[in-house]
Image (cartoon, rainbow, N blue to C red):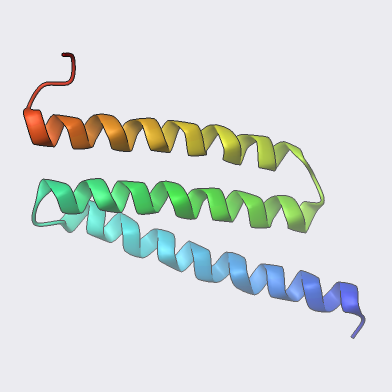
Length: 94
């Protein structure tokens, strides 16, 4: 096995592990007993989606996936802030 094949195999294994983490975060999002649990699961899901896109971009050697991951990171941060503010104050707009 060459070094390139080792890296490609490692990327595929990592993508499967991150996919499993996404499934577990989705399960927590659907079954979370409280609203903060669901917000945390949504944030975890966005972080794992970013990781999956980064790994997929490395696997395909394409830069477009890194840009998509950056957009998801910005949207994930904004949604987490808005949902947390809503849970604390029950009002989004001040």
